[in-house]
Length: 365
Image 1 (cartoon, helix red, strand yellow):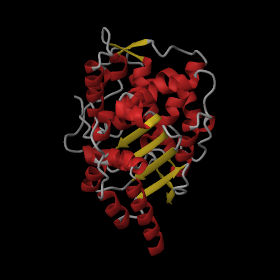
Image 2: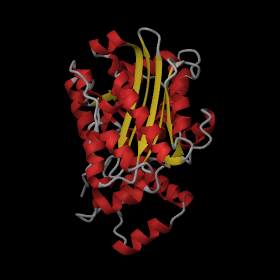
Image 3: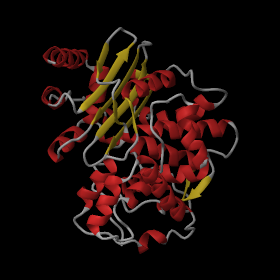
Image 4: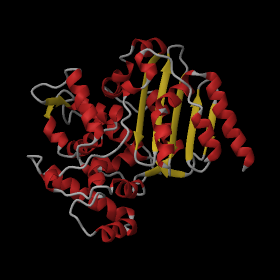
């Protein structure tokens, strides 16, 4: 039996701005920030001197932001010729790490619509692009199997993200915390709650190894899940996700934007994998030289990380995490997170409102 994760899918085509429509600066974020100053961490800065910082030196749940590190390791290994970005991989090899999530379905639909599938095979580059532009966790797990678990774990040091906690296969962890082996419910919940981070990661990697060795992709069908327990189980994973500093990830955005991390052909592959899908829009091409963006959502967190170089040379970088959200807060934030990000980049009036709101909150402390 497969489980359907109820996650809001945030993809590149969900933003009105990318479809030729005007972005709408979301007022709800301003309201949320004032009411919940402990629930968000934010850094924004640009080359015009604008700077917004809030709780960005405190550890927060960085969730899928760690996929930037997966992708940097991918382009590094491409440069080292460990494999080819155009190598075609059977889609079932990726799907065996997935439990019928909405993200995988949307990514599959995208591949079909854009004719990127050939004989049910997809290029390596598209798999990695699916991690960043679709937040597809199964793609992330598959890439661990190709990049090597040790290389992925070491990416924290390789790219100098020393405050980020250990990386692990998120899709496998998502399956693991849904109690696939049907341990008595309360016993399982108590076990997860009492596990330290290292033991949890070991269990996630153990399940990952099981799925990686399942060449036919049949293992996932043998797991059993308790209907109606998704929210409770998924919240357990939120407490185990990687922690890091928003300020660190925003500095990483700056390094990527300025191309200082890239050697040889890494920049070219980065553009093709990360930026090209976003830059396919004529409006994006008119406004930006290049732009990258990652959004990610769990049942009670939403994160966004962006960088952009405008046609006039201006550079901007944004990273924000929103955590410990109620169901209503999560829905309201997740549905407008794209507009929030692009409004900060594009709308000077909205940028000032956010800056003023953060200053106001700081004065109230």
